[in-house]
Length: 169
Ligand code: HEM
Image (cartoon, rainbow, N blue to C red; front, side):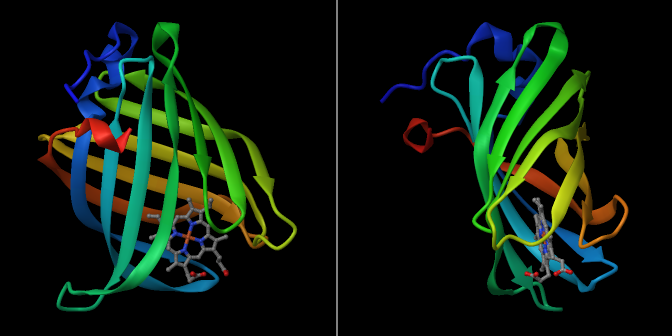
């Protein structure tokens, strides 16, 4: 299938489209800190949203993959006035709706709604910052979970390693 034209409304977040790979660090007061690898794919099908999937792996000290960690998938909906709505779901029984905005190469999102299944861990709010720095995608994630006030859980830096492939939408 040919790559469709990017919907013009997506211009503020067009820089996200493609396949990204990199690594980051994670931690929280209730857990051991860890290093992880991450792959993010942003795709589109000509409509005014991006598809989004992130996969992560625990890394050992040599940087080798040990086992899968979290994955999340959803849609980034670009609105007029550089506003964004983002719907994400997690295999841990959590779904999140973020709202936020794009300011040049920076995207800031905070949760508007969080829902959890009966067996999900306690999680009440998230805040995400994404930025394009020297062509790399940096992102940082703060969360309120397990009775703790909102604070850092994840930060990572990814490089663009490929273009968008339509079959992934
Ligand atoms: C790159 C993304 C992420 C990675 C690599 C990651 C990794 C981890 C790891 C390794 C742990 C500790 C072991 C475990 O419970 O599995 C953990 C705990 C946790 N994470 Fe994440 N996480 C990510 C994103 C998220 C997101 C988006 C949420 C919320 C929607 C979240 C919520 C939690 C919670 C609630 C815990 C439990 C803490 C505890 O048991 O005390 N994480 N995460």
